[in-house]
Image 1 (cartoon, helix red, strand yellow):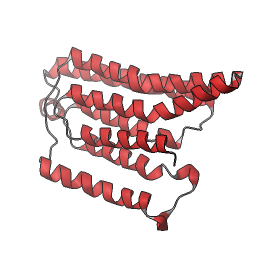
Image 2 (cartoon, rainbow, N blue to C red):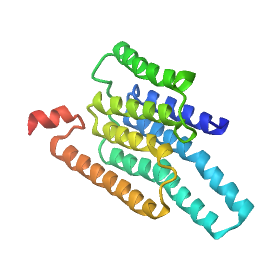
Image 3 (spheres, rainbow, N blue to C red):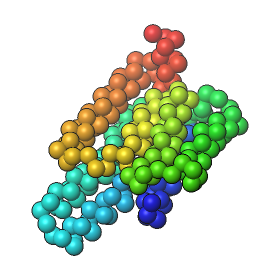
Length: 214
């Protein structure tokens, strides 16, 4: 694995892990933006270099598609969720389990993936060398969704889980990119709309309160 890719993935992993312990919605959204920006930055730079060196139409298409993915995940989607926060509230809450247990669980999640990544007995093919870190981010994202009552944080966790899989599908056909981006944006718009309407109905962002008053 190249150093630039490793650094980007490590930053993304730490951003995802820290999001599991954030108190308010704004902080969680910021970690989503950091995670997405770091994951897509290396691939974006590779495409830019290929464009500047080759100056070919194919390189331009690759760069445009990669930039659209990076912009959507790192800027557009966090802005959509931030809009939902401004229409509701910057909710402050903690994971449903206490911080000590949460830390132990996060560490327990990380250990097997780190062992899989660094242990030579489990060496992976070159195209799959990012798998342990990608799955670690995915697992942290699931933990975030499972331990929060704030639907905005749950939506952030969903996007983080989706971003975590990006390194595994970076070579997907370009023809699928517009469909994937449109679907991602649509899901977030619908999610934010539902959250705003539920907040207006129940006066709170806590999904447990939605359940009890329904």
